[in-house]
Length: 258
Length: 261
Image 1 (cartoon, helix red, strand yellow):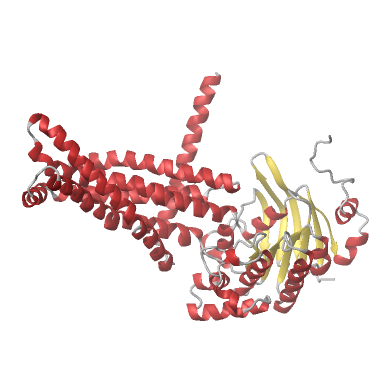
Image 2 (cartoon, rainbow over the protein chains, first blue to last red):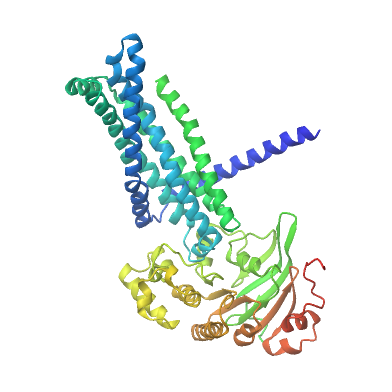
């Protein structure tokens, strides 16, 4: 009997959490599309999320592209398929590694900082204070963060990650593995299809939405001082990463079918 | 001596609030008249802050009614809630200043967010409000983290009065301040409240604050208002709870939940 009770309790609390998150997400979407809009906050968030994440996203992509080229060359040489290296690198980076690794890195950077900032604002009553100043925290704090991250992930970060990732592969291939630079670029461009780019950018937008949503959700519901803020920061990063990996599969499946 | 026909500014009827199984407000009844300075006293955990947050709409009571100017506010959402909220200003216990913004942006936050003024005017309004709380214009461009506790309280007060509310709430305005700064803050509250003719509701456990700023005093204990009276009646109320509280005795009808060693 006790065992059944445990299963029941886990199920109920899972459903509760899903429901709360669903309501939070719906409310956020509602507030994104209804005025007033706070453009100053939006610009500030775009700067923090987009511009300041560039170095770390760029470095990640560069080394991933380089390592991928080495691995593909090594693996490909086992059945004389080294010449497919440029194609595999560009498809691997653009369709999968560029968006997913950027997503995970940005989740660590941005979800955590959003959860910590909103959490601190919650426990120091700043969010309550905002409501008493006739300003909806959903509009002033949450909507700009979600919009900024959902836009900056595809339009800035993942575009840059894809390009630098391919360049990482290019540098290793031409510098170390004796590929001809011109041929490498031709092959890359010839085999890259528009669907690959759509997949990459769609993933980026979905990941961006989840990154900001998790950061805001956990931060907004923080309670209990420094420890509570710490817990919500951890939860934000972990749940954002999980959602990224899960939705990565789903988006891939959608584009695979088409 | 208020005639019966005057509508109370704020009227609480049978307000009940609980968190899970724990009842915080049992049945709170309280009327606050226009222009009156009401102070609610009570120990930690007696439900003072929860009462304030219910009136502000930050918490939702399980049952009971909260009327502002005779209109029911429980359950209001959206633009109706916003309309009521514009009547309120609040000074939070820890100041609750937005630390990502400069002092002047904090003070004019409500005006800016509602697009009532442009940024240049907002800055001037902020400086004017800083002057009203005894701070120099230089403070305007500092960030809240650079201010002392007393200055943060004063900036919080400036922010609360900047949008010219009809009702101002003060949540433990003197907690954490030295006695002199506490008196400065009390003096400022008194001055602002009288000058603006607003209705004030303060919660505190600081008796010197009560003696200075209260017209009326209400005592909350265990989720109920157990006594109300004017400031002059506090000292000879004949109520054992009030007696114990104002003299700060551990022995009496109010028992703290402490295990005796």
